[in-house]
Each structure stands twice: as C-alpha cells, then as structure tokens.
Image 1 (cartoon, rainbow, N blue to C red):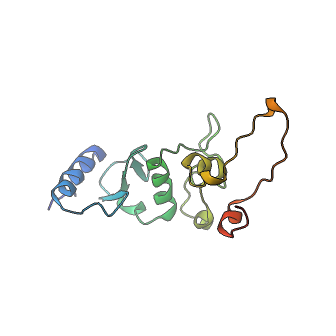
Image 2: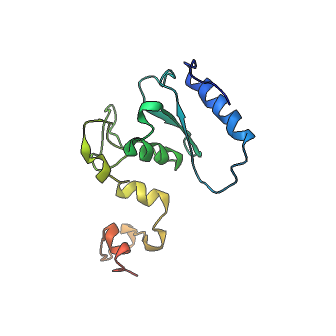
Image 3: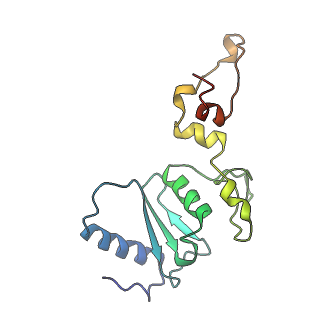
Length: 154
C-alpha cells in the first residue's frame, strides 16, 4: 500500500498509482482506469487529467464522483478534443466536451457527445454516408441518434 497523502505533484501520484496497479492482477476486464488522488495533489485548477487516446484518467478526490468530469475525461481517452471556438474557454453547450465545468449546474447529467464527436468515434459507422457535392446532388434524410435506437433506419 502506498501513502499518497503528502503528494503534491500530480505526476508523482500518477506514477505511484501506476506502480501499485501494475503489481495487482486486475485482468483485462476493463477498458479504462480511473485513479482518485488525494486532495493534496495539484492538478493546476483542473478537476482531472487524462491520457489523450489512452486508457487512464487521474482525478482529484473532490471530482472523482462527478459524472460530467468522468465523461469528459473518457472523451479524451477516446481521442476527443474540446468542442471550443478559438480563444474561448467554453464551447458547444450541448456537448460534454464543449462546456466548462460548473458544479452548481444540474444539467450536466443530460449532456452527451455531440454529433461531430459521435461521428468521429465511428460508433454508428453503419449509418454514415459520405456525399460529394461536386458529383451532383443527392437527397438524403438526416436522422437523430434516437432513430438508431428505435430501429427507424436500416
């Protein structure tokens, strides 16, 4: 067991947690690993950090149980970037990757990855269609994500 209570540097917490986890036999039953670090760890005013395109995220103790923060960090693990406009600190208010964290805002549980992020993950690639406007026009129906869930498209 490693005591991280006096750890002030997030990199030390990360490396120590990795060392402990490496020694444990946790198998391969998971896709992502979430580390909760003590309050003393300095995340430079961020609630958490994660590997872009990786499988690990590190959270300050206070924010480890916030669903918005968890989804945002998993978004980075999925190689998603913030949905921000240049020079702004917040962006698409409907996307978990585009809005700044506000612990008083209760709408965070109703957020998801926006259409562009969902497209980039390839989750619904069976339904993707690429249209080249140079080769003429084509009439297509745009559908929302519920159409897939409800079996309304094939």
